[in-house]
Amino acid sequence: MTRIACLTVLVGALAGCVQNEYEVELTPVGEKLQRRIHIKCLGPAATPDELQRLATAYSTDLPGNPKVQEFENSFAGRLPDDIGGHGTCTRWETPLGSAALYVERFRGVDDVAAEWERRKVAADRVTDHLIGWLGQEFRSDPGWPSLKEFFNSHVRRDVLNLALYLWTAGLSRQDDRNPEFLVRVMQYLVERGYFTYEEVPALMRAASDSRRDDGKRMLEVIRQKIVARSDDDLFAESLKFLATPESLKHSLDKYLETTAEFQQLLDDWQKKLREDPTLARPDSFDVLGLYSDVLLTGAVLAGGDQLRLSLNTGREPVATNGDWSVEGQRVSWPDQFLPRPGQPPLLTYTVWDQPDAVAQQSRFGKVVLQGKSLVDYCLWYHGLTEAEQEEWDAFVETLSPGEELPDALKAFRFEHEPPDRQRDDRIAASPVDAILAGLKVEQ
Image (cartoon, rainbow, N blue to C red; front, top):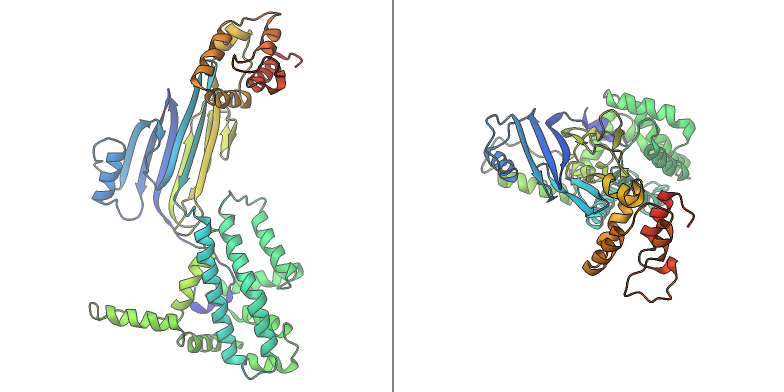
C-alpha cells in the first residue's frame, strides 16, 4: 500500500504474520497447577538469554533446539512470566471441597490512565496538523474560519473518542458474527453527521479501491464532505489539492516539512549519519506515523506472537471467559494474537470447584454444595478467623443425615455472637442457607 492509500483510508488493519507460536496447557495437580508450554519460533530463534530465562523459570535445563522449545513444571500461586504478563492460580481448600481461580494477563498495557493521556496527546497533535495543513490551503478562503472551528471543537474530540473506542475494543473478545464494536463506532460517526448508513456501500468501495492504490474515490468522498461542512459556495474551488493522489501528496509534504516533529526527525537523522552515511533521509509522512500507531492500535490484534491456551479443569467451570468442552472436559480459548505494545492486555480467567463427595455425603446424605454454592462457601470459610473455622468444623463433624439436620443447621451460631441475633443476621447464615437449598429444605 502506498502512502497515498494510507492517507485515504480512515482506519486499517495492523497486518502481519506469526512470529512465535505459544501453546500453553494447564492441568490442576493437587494443590498446584501444572503448566506445559510449547514454543515454536517461526521468526528468529530465541536468544541464549531468553532460553536461560525460561529454563530458570521452569527450573530445568536449557533446551537443545532454540527454534522449538518445551518447558513443564507445577506451580502454586504465582505462575512463571514465560510469555509476558502476570498469572496466578489460587485455591481455597475446605473439609467439604475446594474452589480454584486461574487468572492471567498476557502482555499489553493495563495502565488505562497513562494510555488515555498518551492518546489524548496524539489526538491533539493529529488535529493540530489537520488544521495546520488545511489552513495552508484554505487560509484566504472566506469559508475557512467556520471549517477551522469545526475541526477545533468537533473533530478534535471525535478523534480522541475513536482512539479510545479502538483501545477499549481490545478489552474483550470480538465476535465476527456479532460485531458490536464496529456498530458502536459507526453509530458514533453517523450521529455526528460524518456519513449515513446509506453511504456505507460507497465508502466500502472507496476503501477497497484505496487498498488497491487507487485513492480517487476516497478523495472525492473527502472533497464532498469538506464542501458540505462549509457555507461558502466557492469553497470547492480551493479543493484543487485534493484533485489527485499526487496533488494531495505534494500538499501534505509541503506542510509536514514545516512541522517541529519533522525538524526533530531531520536532526536525529543528521546525528546518525555520522555512524551510518547510507541512512535514508526521513520522509515527511513519518510525522503522521508518530501518532497513527498510538491512535489506531487496540481493536485489531493481527500479526506478531500467537497464543493457544487450554485448562483441564475436569468439570464445568463456574465462571470463565473461555469455551467449555464437555468432550475434552477442559476450557480453551480461541487462538489469538498476543497484544502489541500500546494495546490492551489479553486477560483469561476461570473459576471452578471440586466437591468432596465423601465428606458431604457423610454429613448431609448427598452432595449439597457444588458449583457456585461451593465457591461461595469456600470464600466464606476462608474469611473466618482460625477460631471460627475450628468451631464451624467441630459443628459440621456433629452433623448426620436425618430429620434433625435442618433444625440443627438453622440453630447454629458462633459462640461470640449475641444469643438474640436473628438467624438471617448470623455469620453462618449464607452457608446454612446454601446447604438447606441443596437439601431442598424450606428455609
